[in-house]
Image (cartoon, rainbow, N blue to C red; front, top):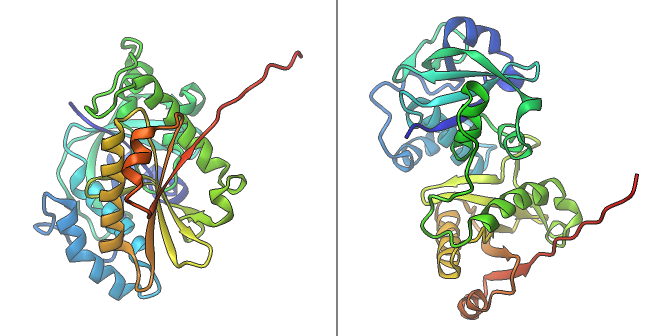
Length: 307
């Protein structure tokens, strides 16, 4: 099955006109031609290029370097021929295209690291999208994987069947909870400063933009990566999303291991948080011997107000 990505055509879509008329997407970077230098595994790419990035940008953190190199690999290699991209043109409309080539390097033009695109005649207005798809396509960063919304996307451009609530993740026990908690993740990010965690931590930012939501690791994306206000602690936060308790505990531990090994600066410690709707006894038992992970239970409430 093809994958789907939201890709920015330059910061604030500044290169949208050039990309659409030239039938390409791309990314700016000073690493030179990457032909023959793009391994199949993004972690191998990061191991090679993070030191290069940090040498060129000594003021940047390991987290920033990992993010920049991960985006570079995704645009140049991770997106496959046949995958679809949604690219905002800066007017509230998304152009939809199919990737038609492998990586090419065009040093004389904007966004020199490129992929050729066949743009479809159909476009998508942001107002037509569901709130969940709007949140995902509006996320900070150059690239966002929006494959989980493929049915909605295809329906918007071609009139396919309505989506069915399913999960392809074998660890998900409750697809309804999975869908609910994805919305809650976006809500938590938008209202972070009003939460208990927001008193001690900030969602990780780079150049004034939040990049800590769905931060990529080699075992999957972290729901939220945060950093303490004194910069001494990194926090891995996961919503349970209907998954089996043992699976989510193991996943958080894997994410924490990645953050400790690949992202933490000298002197920084790594902590974890799991958030779930139910007071999960199995999670509490597992975490009884893992003091670096804390369990939170959330509450949902709403009321009707007569107009």
